[in-house]
Length: 380
Length: 252
Ligand SMILES: Cc1cc2nc3c(=O)[nH]c(=O)nc-3n(C[C@H](O)[C@H](O)[C@H](O)COP(=O)(O)OP(=O)(O)OC[C@H]3O[C@@H](n4cnc5c(N)ncnc54)[C@H](O)[C@@H]3O)c2cc1C
Image 1 (tube, rainbow over the protein chains, first blue to last red):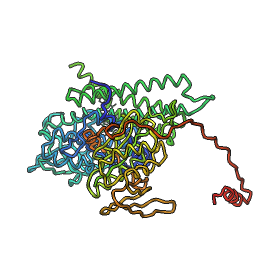
Image 2: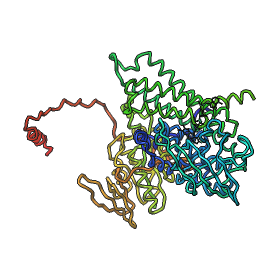
Image 3: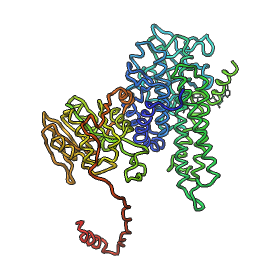
Image 4: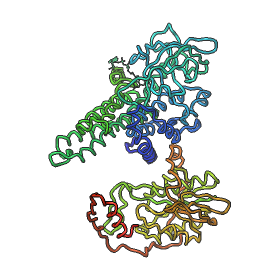
């Protein structure tokens, strides 16, 4: 397997970078400061097919693989992590499960408008008492007539209030414990009883609304069940498996931006009569940051390639997510340090990279959970 | 309607420009589709959307110019013609216009669209020469291009506003940034570009034996460094003194 990117992926990167640097990046600071959903960037993403990256052309998408997808997310995240997480969650944990587990009818109904960016997707698994232990979720889906009635509260839902479609995981078998009795439902946001509750005030990713989704006697037809009854938990796990590759791309983008900006800053900033990058004490740090960043990239692309080739990739995706998000946090922390006091004020992007990077160590499985996944495979 | 858009790959204008030992622009580094030509492609695609037909890119340049051509195809152009020959390195405006004319003629386009000038060479001479060689009327500095029947009508940008100029098709127009922001290549556009035709044309196929520029660069000297200007402190009559200065240099 070649480590070089194909010419296709290089032109893809060039095109997405073009969009990210000229449309997304100029808005990034304001998106963060004003906690503003990046409408223009997301609608432009729809025009450029970035809202249907993995969706095949027969459903109106670009039909690209996970490596191409990861590159797209990396480029957007290097410009604005809020915008990238909106695009990432939509493509990976909302669109992809429909693609993998949906009936032909479900795919025809939902994928084309999602690919155009007209319907934004969201993934609703986490609950107040079910975080890392997601299988303990309590939201219920009761059989009623020829459909289901959902009740419960989800928290930490990305794209809350902006999504047109929520992929909701709910318990269909109250007797079964844990993962066994969980099913997945496609819940349109305009279904009566679906309410966007509190939007959390987060430390970062401020342009991406995350919060509480309240489901009160929400009736959906049986045709909105995604996959098999009581087998929805594996849909969630499969979505998160490849979702972690996207999150690795997100972290790679933030890490790269933090590194590149810090490098440029230390070459410009003079103290004691020379650029601070001339001090060996900083050079060794810069060398370490560059090395870890490169290792993250290889691990992430490796996981993406395995997934694209249809090979087992769960362990590698967890390794990539663990290593790349830890690296991004470490780079961002040091980027603040390298810029000194200016790194700590929001005239510069360093403190934003720092706040945005942190989330990636927590969501789509905390980095402790990634270690559980990796160790489980080792001890099999 | 058949529209030809001329495109050129240039060294990344955001990177420092260097000369080679024989006084040519160093084209070894990062290269991009000339931003001025992106407006040409955009204008061509808009006309195609309005009237149907096809947009054909024509480029002269080394093998790696294929990347710039690919970008234009990703934006939505239908196919391309790429003239490449080692003897064309260092081609001057006239030779370039001759090559482009020879490549464009067999296409019999209704309209040829060029940027006003290349961002690297900036002579602005290729489009008028090309129009002459193709025997087409030219309408330059267009900020808007419309086709009505067999007439091409443009809003020609001037310092004061614009002139409305009409020409009989086939015609050549040069376009400014006024035609509208070039579209970004979509992911589908990039994928579609892979299978679009890029016809490689050698000099011999154009009936030209070897490129021989009429012009050569004999020497290069740095521009005179600018002298410090005069600072006028305002002690009540700054306005009159500035006016006197402007009158003296005939600026007003
Ligand atoms: C910005 C953001 C966006 C999010 N978006 C979504 C979304 O769109 N949809 C969605 O469903 N969820 C989303 N989440 C939720 C996210 O997936 C959870 O926060 C995450 O799974 C952790 O759950 P928790 O917050 O309840 O932490 P807890 O599970 O309570 O964890 C607390 C601590 O204990 C550790 N821990 C837990 N179990 C173990 C164990 N067995 N061994 C060792 N350590 C352990 C954790 O690593 C953590 O350090 C988002 C979260 C954030 C911050």
